[in-house]
Image (cartoon, rainbow, N blue to C red; front, top):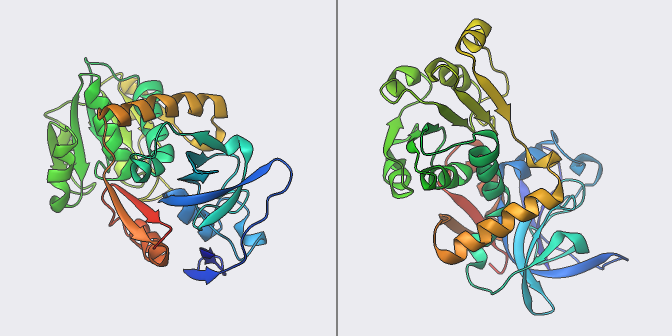
Length: 312
């Protein structure tokens, strides 16, 4: 079978032909259809997360869809792609607990990209952001996989929602997701551009210089929800601004979320996909394009979700 694998930490993925995997006790073999590409996959190949460095060659990939005994399933959790090899392959061995049956094989590509992005967006909007119809929300990095869903979920609460993108070419995509307005530009002057809205909540997937701009833009009592640092891990801001405004800064990661909690969120998200109340903008690529997909994530050149069709 074919798999996209890492041979050197920090290196590029290679398309390899390898033996079919064999399941041990408590495991099953899933015939993969689609594998989602997430920033977490990139951090694993960089050696900053997970056990890839001690287990080369390494197959990345934390979630996807496929077939078990001919029935459609979602594969995620159980350490897949972080503590054990992932799903960038035609067949994978996974723990039984990491397999969720799907009601049909419709939307397989969309659902493959739903897990990390959808659960993150849901928690950012409903759990940490506590967004209601009274809120005025800004989603930083609104054209990304999480950002796109965060815009849709926040808008569904009745809130006023603005998206932010540094690329003017992505404006129409963000508006199509339901944003009322799109702020175009990087962190320079960002607070001033958001002043008309007076945001009560800002959802931050970027970090770096964007987080201080968000803190400056929030109204008194506002909430900043951080779930990514694609623009930089180190952040510097004025603590007086934070406490004098009475702001709340909250961080979300699925790495420490109880499986039962994320499973409940996934059930709700799957229903929303089936009903057409949320959409996941995906770009399908082949296994041989996995290395370029990681490069594009690092360069922040992705709109929506990249999903690998493992048959290509």
